[in-house]
Length: 347
Ligand code: ASP
Image 1: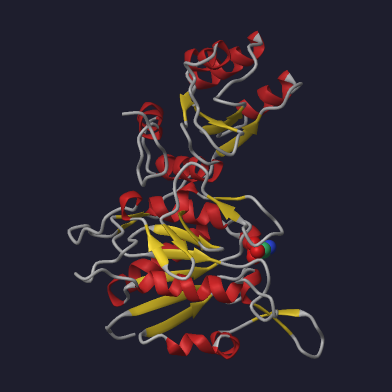
Image 2 (image 1 turned 45 degrees about the vertical axis):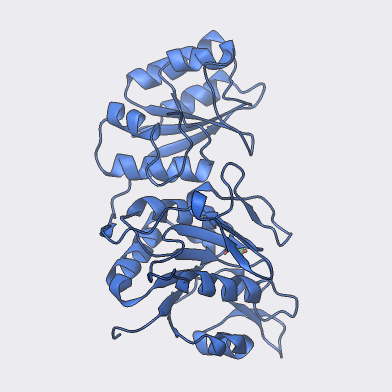
C-alpha cells in the first residue's frame, strides 16, 4: 500500500452485514469486497480511496477472542499513517466488547476507528447495512478545516447514532436500533445532515502518538446477582483457580444483599487480591455505594465502584490492566479513573 490523500481502510471481520443471499440457493454467504461494491455502487461516489482488508474466513462475532482484538490493533497500527480513518465491519453480537477493548488498546489514537454492522445482510433489499456502512465511511474520513479528524475515537455507528465505543451496549437483537449509549451522549446524530457534537467528543491532538497495546489477561468472571443466589454459587465463583478480577453486576445504584456470608465471601476474595468491580444491572445510571446501607457494605468489603461503566467496558478494561501487570491496588485505583472516556467518575 502506498501513501495517499483522503482515504479509509475498511476492515471486514464478518457478521451479518457481510452476508449476501445466493440468488440460486437463498442461503446467506459471506461477500468479498468486489461483491460488496456491486451491491453498494454508491461507494464509488466517494471522492477518496477506500481500501479493504478481509478476515479469511469471516467470523461470526460470537467467536471473537482477545486474539482477534490484537489482530485488529495490529492492522490499525501497521496502516495508521496511510489512512485518515478506519471502518471495521463486525457482527453486532460482540461489537461493544471489541469497541471497548480497542479503545483501551489503541492508546494515543488520533484518528477515527468506526465499527459498524447490520441487522439485515447487505444483500437483502431492506438492509440497514448499506446506510450504516456509507455513513461510517463518511465519518471516518471527516476532517475539519485544519485537516484534523472530527471524531478521533473508537466509535460504533448504528442506526443514525455515532456512539463512543466503550459506552455502547447491544440492546436489541431484532430492531435496527441495535445499540445504545445510555450514559453518554451521542457523538453525532445523523439525519439529512451529520450533526457532530464536539463538546462531548475527544478533540484531535496531533501531538498524540499511537501506542498499540497487545497484553490482555482474561482471568475474569462476571457475577450477576439475582434474588435467591446460593452461597455455594458465589463461593465457587470467587475461588476459581487463577481468578484475578470479578465484575459484580449489582442492583440499582450498586446495591447487593446484606447477608453475612455474601459480604464475608467478597471481603475474603478482596483480601486474596481479587479485584471486584461493582457495576449496576440497570442499563442507565451510576453506582453510588455510599447511598444505601446495602451498597456501603460492599465498599467495606473492598469492592470498588465501576461508576456508570457498561459490562463490556469493565470486562475489557480489567483484561487490559491485568495484562499490563499492575498490582491489585493499582488496578482498583485505575478502575476509578477514566482511561478512554469510558466512565463518568466524580471529580
Ligand atoms: N451473529 C452475528 C454476529 O454477531 C449477528 C450480527 O452480525 O448481527 O456476528
